[in-house]
Amino acid sequence: MAAKRIVSFLPSATEVMYELGAEENLVGVTHECLYPQQAKTKLLIINSVFDSEKMTSKQIDDKVSELVREEKDIFKVNEKNLKEANPDLIIAQGTCAVCSAHTNEVNKALQILQQRPQVMVLDPHTIEEILDNVIDIAQKIGKEEEGKKLVESLKKRIDFIKSNDIKSKKVLCIEWIDPFFTSGHWIPQMIEIAGGVNSISATGEHSRRMTIDEIEKADPDIIVMMPCGFDTKRTASECTKVLQNNQRWKNLRAIENNQVFAVDANSYFSKPSIRIITGIEILAKIIHPQEFPEIKIPENSFKQLKF
Image 1 (cartoon, helix red, strand yellow):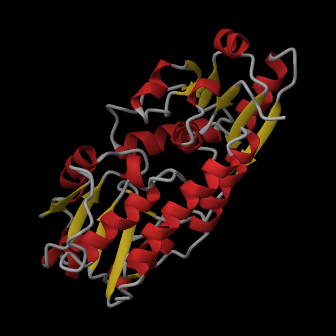
Image 2 (image 1 turned 180 degrees about the vertical axis):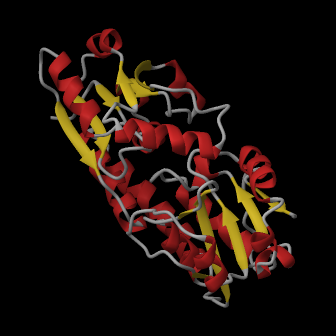
């Protein structure tokens, strides 16, 4: 039987629910479920224990490290709203305990609810797994045909980019500014599809700290800054403040050639959502700006940076 009352602990699952026309069955979300706008009207079940909006990447990293070190929660469950939502299905994730509500929050929710709901845990690390998750969600909510059609349309967009098959420029995507983190999981695959040669990280592996030594050794043609959860404006501002006086950074080939870009990571890269296909299109525009004139990408989705 298809689930009727669904709480999403995962922004990408929330996006899929709306895309499949199942928003009426969505009764609860997290503070990170900001797209589409209507998702903000749902009961707020999960929130962060600290407000990161006005913090620098260094301050955020320090705070998260402190909470992890002290074995404290990063997220909190709103007991009142959860009881009101009374879900028969909770969709959660197993990819990253820092990015979205994880195992701890699911366990707390199960302890709060009198009637135990089903729990669906998604743990994608590649584009194929992200698309498989669309089908998984569609099956759970009784929208299997709609799910298949959606995945087919997304695959067509991927195939169009792939058909150009141009790979010459080395590309490095950076997931955090201070300290530097590699972009793991599905990002290396996105680079390859978009026509770049991925640097340092590998598809499917977790993001990790990265040194300036590693960046110098890779010496990429293009650098794309995509700090997890940041939009283009915030990324550009932070990069300027943190890296403007870093001489080793300024000596890199990509910086000297003005081939550094800030992107809207929060919308198109950080989350395992269907909008990563738009992220691939954005990367294609960055890596090969003359090759894809017919592709239209969202306004303010990327910006060229100069140091």
